[in-house]
Length: 324
Image (tube, rainbow, N blue to C red; front, side):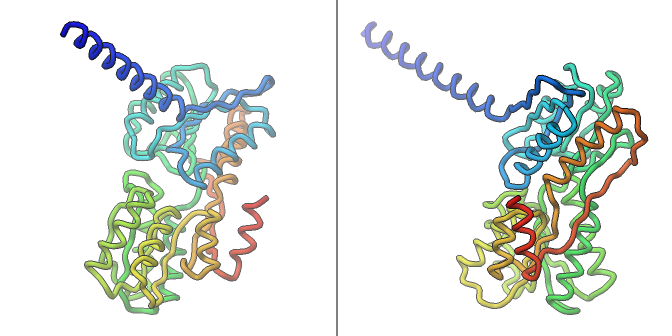
């Protein structure tokens, strides 16, 4: 009996060690760094996640600019862009390390006071990339997200006409781009049409949530006329669900981001349009801006990159740009 108990205890210990080791291994997966033997500045970079073509393009742009401007960028990110707590810990860890500047793509645009105070205390300049921090003491580089929403609203109006019912799927609204895109979309159609937004909900930039929410939309509003998604991943989820439901009538889907998978759906006629947002260019411009600032140049508070509609007419050209 005692021998059996000892064996059972030994087995439990082995399992526990395996679980702990597995956890450590997973934790290491969300940390990456880019090191160069010769660099001008060391920059801490905290992204939201690394689970989409767009976020991968941000990372590529940071590394590409690092080679050109001789910067050493230490890149970290949580497993999910809704993991605000984990990201805030990473931000504070970097601010307590030996860096010249920090670049943040915040999961939560509103939850910044603690780390902004720490950055000020340590004299480390803060730059936000892609997603604005609601604070006066940082420099933002990325898209004009309200304008992105306006472009989507204008095209939806052109596709549907003056009357109809539309839905909005957004990422988490505590992240400024999704809130601003939804507001820009609603503002445009309110001023320029009689289109009615009958459904609006968060789908957390998730393909599966996009699928789930699309079912909910059609359950409640089977005659919906159009759907605006504030990113590409959710737009792909919308397409997937509509294909499963075998919906034949034309329902314009408009998304955001310059991703090859979603642009492919534009060429196939499954998505009416995407509003462009080039992650590589945004990230490259961010590192370039950080270097200019650290070199003593005066920098504007907001630096906007260009966005335009991607439709069947110009989709192939965008795919060529991505392939480069």
